[in-house]
Image 1 (cartoon, rainbow, N blue to C red):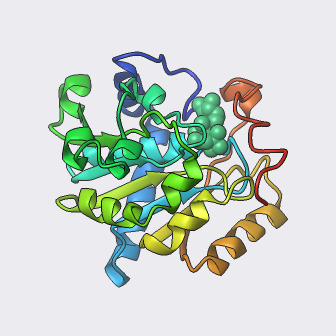
Image 2: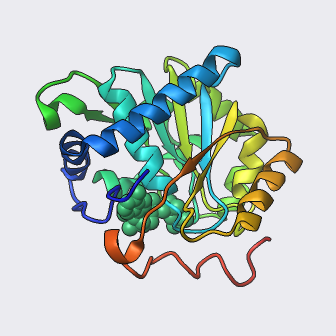
Image 3: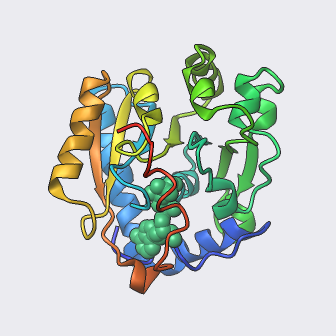
Length: 251
Ligand SMILES: Nc1ncnc2c1ncn2[C@@H]1O[C@H](COP(=O)(O)OP(=O)(O)OP(=O)(O)O)[C@@H](O)[C@H]1O
Ligand SMILES: [Mg+2]
């Protein structure tokens, strides 16, 4: 992904339209997502890759932007795609897409709502007028209890399997794995892990370390997305989530 993946989206009820319009207007960005879709489809030919977890070594490398952009691009291509925010530490997907976050993944796991009822529907056609795709999104929900408890719940994998039924692909966002271990709890239960790497910021050692952590946890890294961008140029120079994961976090 070269630049221009985010930073200029307005929060609010039509935020996803800005994202889609950006996709429509920016051919290079569109091509990046199409290449990513093709790569995943080619991998899919050799092994079943329906449920994919997106993570990164460090905060702010672009996981949420990339996984959301990919989900929108897949929905535009009329694939049945479900996007899930499993970043229960600092969920941002709902803001990026302008969706309500009153209930979501934590409420499904807690048994307060059924998966199908908690999923939002984003109509691609409303934004572009040209395609008919639909994206379904489960936001994180309001995380009251410890996020880790929720992720450790044996129900989580059942919930993911249940909500995954009826979709071609399920894309899951998560926190950075060298900061917190949440993605490692999910890694063994998904079909593959995709590492998002901001090559301009993260060191090679960090990226390698991240892959090793996934391997050790029993997960499979099936791909790496190079998301090279400069926050000074393309987004806020201060990323609000830097620092949250630092002190005392599981390393
Ligand atoms: N390819 C890109 N081009 C321009 N800006 C980008 C790109 N990717 C990400 N950004 C911007 O960088 C910032 C961090 O991106 P994002 O929130 O997607 O990262 P993240 O890895 O999900 O962060 P966190 O670890 O906090 O969950 C955002 O302001 C986003 O708009
Ligand atoms: Mg994120």
